[in-house]
Image (cartoon, rainbow, N blue to C red):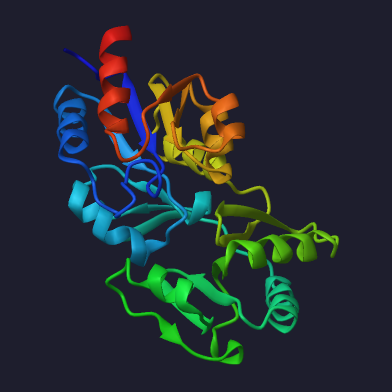
Amino acid sequence: MNLDNIILITDADGTLLTDDKSILETDRAAIRGLIENGGLFTVATGRGVALTRGLADDLNLEIPAVIFNGAAVYDFKREVFLWQSNLPKTAGEYIKLVQKRFPSVGIEILRGDEIYVISTNWIEEKHLELGATKPVRCDFGDVPQDGWIKVLFVDEPETTDKIIGFLNRQGIGDVHMVRSAPWFYEVLPSGVNKGTGFKKLLEILNIKDKYVVAAGDFMNDLEMIQAADLGVAVANAEEIVKKQSDLIVCDNNSGAMREIIEYLKRIN
């Protein structure tokens, strides 16, 4: 079956990956079949270069990925940024506000392929285990002050709720902030999300006539799902994501990629 009119882009954690951060063999086989029949496949993730590299190598991604929740497009074959958007200098002031008000919070500053950890907690340490690259652990003043792509706040869901409320009350308007998991709150360049990142990827690849399929589970996937020709939510997705999707498939532990690709075969 010819699937060369399709490009499938999927969120990683909670969608492509199971709860134990693996890829089911049934999903792996389905992805391989999509590619062998002419389709294109890649990921759009909140992870940066370091935490996405292992996944990209495992999948042998032939086309670039959208990383940093849409703030960059990166080619893992050539190890090069094809496009990126940077945070304004004011992001440093927001870090100081949060760190003073919530001393328990873990904080990452992501710059290129580097991760600077200026404060940590047990959730942050578990998160860092996903990557092979060692983070730079340092004080805020030791982080280079240019080229920031993303700031990540990490804490218990209840504390993350409070961080979101606190930042919302500050009247901040020059960055985009999004919750990407119950324990993650991210500061991104203004106007950036996975939807804009995916459009940038299509522009870079000069893709104009593909049937675009996007899959996800959380609020940070919403714009990408809305922008696709076929927006897909997994069964474990947030209700608002399901409501905005064209198709709901099984959960991330039960073969979501296989189900999506089987559906595409039926309608193609």
